[in-house]
Image 1 (cartoon, rainbow, N blue to C red):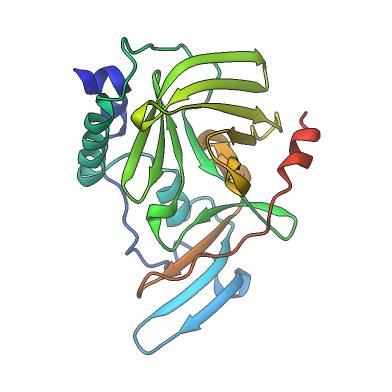
Image 2: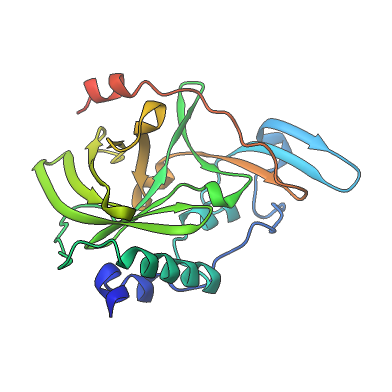
Length: 241
């Protein structure tokens, strides 16, 4: 019952079959080579590594990145994380009615003055966000890690402020600034994180196909991740619409 209190009907909505990284991009899943913008191409005797711009919204990598359903190992890891987090909850757990706020978010990156989604070489680095009525869950190498909502404010249509509690009852403030009403592109500002990681750029899953995707694919060992350009978050917030 505690898990349901934490996540409501999250598991019912999310349990499903997820595609895995070992699917190779074939001719039916990507553009023809002459139409594809390659950022890196390497080939060895038994493996290849490519980084390219995916424009086809029906590609396997778009399908995989936008699919928030969890397979059995992901679900089990999520349940374990919720159980471990249960001892750090503030009781009673509050539920919030987040009308108009998206529940699934994907990171957006900048490369040569344009914004992209990113399919990483290591899928543990997808860095997605998932929102329930009482938690915000962050994806990382250990699966979905929850943080508890303590309070929510929506001072205007483009700003949401969450008071959060993470493991060991550490409190923080998370501010989501929607900077583009057309794409719902948003700056996430977390005061518990210092330095360049305080800010992140995200888009709701429903609006993700407004952006092309950079895919980092290999059929060998995990590759180095693609290096994107730095984002001037202060400028973005200054120009908030």
